[in-house]
Image (tube, rainbow, N blue to C red; front, top):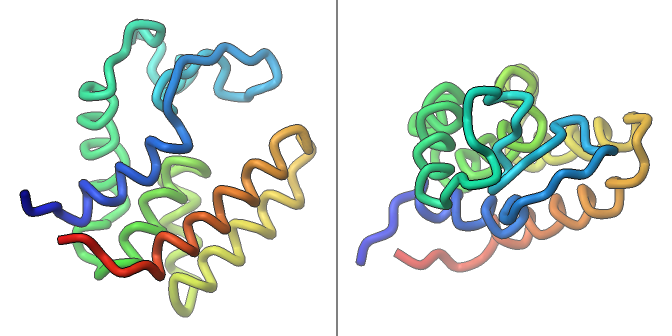
Length: 140
């Protein structure tokens, strides 16, 4: 099987976004596979399948963020940032970043400036895991 950049990027993201949650402290509210009820009010989030989430990730995050235009690992970083921080913010940060490492630093700075510290360690862990994944030997 030949894996595309999207396949590999969504595999990483789903490891961090998988599973149903309804945490009252999460600004997204009810989520499943990282897809939030707040962003998709007409979806049955509780019963959202992984396959449905992947379709949403490609159509609403990968494509609008221009990830197919970027080389690996930049497209991975932009995609995961779009999922975690929003497409607009990821695109804006990309405009003012020198490379993917600079984009990750912008992401860390953003996290440390947020008021909700409950998730800070998890966000930082995810960012470090993203760095590690971006620098691994790729499976093609």
